[in-house]
Amino acid sequence: MPRQGTRSTTIRMLIASTLCVITPPSLGATMQDMQRDMQQRREQQQRDDQARSAERARQDMEGMRKMQENNREQMQRLEEMNRQQTQEREKFFRESEEQHRREQAEERTARKATADGETSPEQ
Image (cartoon, rainbow, N blue to C red; front, side, top):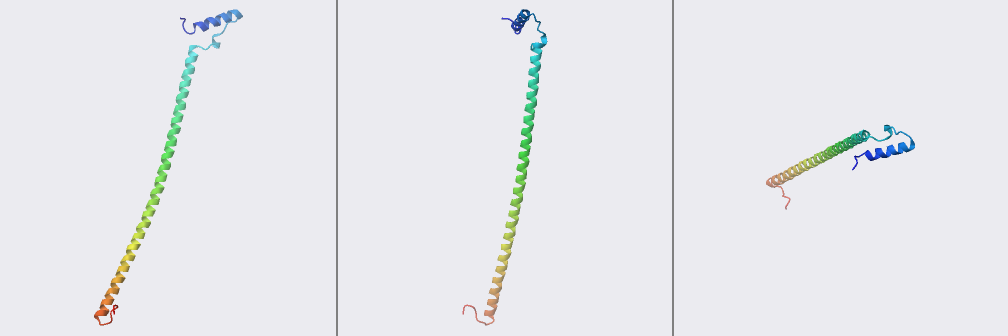
């Protein structure tokens, strides 16, 4: 089996001799040219991969930033709801205490009136 490139070289020489033209080496793709092209493609592929990776990382960071912002906003809403509920509970507690004090005062007044000989509300 002939070495790789031997057949094409032989064919080129036959064509050149038939046409009486000498084929300069710059017209044929040499092994070094192919290796250089392959290396350039690999390097370009690496650059493309790095660019895609960097874009994914940027998008991931943007997504995380948005998630953090949403979490912050949600925490603020929850804190506001908690503050409002606390105020409502405190108001209810105050109103309940005031109602209880009024009822106790009315009971004391009624007992005192009964003790003083005045008519009680049951009569």
